[in-house]
Length: 159
Length: 395
Image (cartoon, rainbow over all chains, first blue to last red; front, side):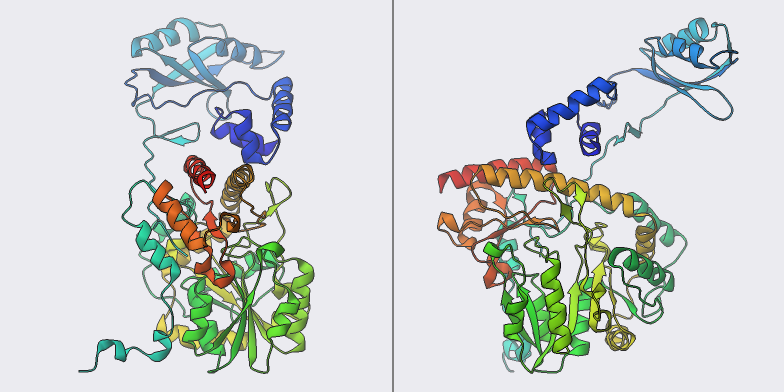
């Protein structure tokens, strides 16, 4: 199972036949493993990791520190789930330390992200404060280095 | 003036040109070659190891070290060796840090052989064994291992070569170029032979982390060093290093673990020829041993996946290939195509731009096979295998 997850995390586009070839298993075995992961809800989804600079995309991304008032029943969960449901929110984590939620928001431009924060996020009952940090440059995301140009510089034949 | 050729020492002149080198010259200069001909990882050394080397340079650590190597490194080595091989050495007197295992092997031969002493080694094997013995005026006595026997070294074949001049047995498991792993019962018999005939054993265990267990090879196999067998530590020179498992070939760092008297003898040569191994490599190696296990396992699993691909493709294209238990080489048997291994490799290069190394470059016992290294990016490996499939279809 671990070996399969390791493969999927690196490249989810492989066909089951290709996964089988790498794992030394049969296609049927791989399909059974995938079905089990699916049933357990262990696979939340598959996505491409895109270098936005390369495609000329002008998407704006921000990390927002959110402070919340915890509720008597359930602490932060109800509010956190509510925030996470917004389409603009790509990731949402409960954090230890100086603030409660780390919310990552994407939008077509700065103004859109700012509007989301001021109109949607900060107006929610229970949100005490927000601090918005805009992302300036991507060096690594989801385990992939941006502009990684490691070339094979080995000699072609060595002992 | 005498011709310059006549100035070359006889024992150097007698050493033939390396088959690897011949082939290298053919491959070099060709465009779009996918090479399965390399003998090193395609990964760069893990970043935390490179970063430790950079940090040591920043701190200005650019001096000589003790001839034996940094004590801090030797202390890490003895702990690591105990964990990996189950043998405990003394960091102060039984460990020598060298410039790669190649230097360590050279030191062993020069320090422990008198002219005419015989060393038994198994073929096909790493290209430098035979010359290292010959350069120390020793006599290299090859024992052939066979593809039908999955390149296991049979103790009875070793026994047949023992004479009153035999001084050492040189082992390399997992083996470059075959990927073979020695079964414990044969290893035990070889140990018995060494004890019975009072021989030293030199064991090059550079690939010992890269072992694949079970059908899929995703689990790491267990390595057993001959040094750990009863009565063997006192007659074994254990050679290991950082090149393969830690992907640190260019750092040129290896080590030997051996009884104090033998270590001292090797050190005598090392101190006058090399002085010490480079300090930046030694600093990087400390980091590798302290924090590198996770990265090593990650790379091993990547090799395991590629090995699975390679073996399943060879099977599909009808190229017999035994399932290698270690290293990152496969050694497919190409005899059914009616070509010598050199012809096979040459035509594969010319017709499909894929480089593999002819098996005879690793000694005559390698004839009939080629070495395909799967330490190559997965997508490249796939293309190479597609091309090999096309090629063998035409044969």
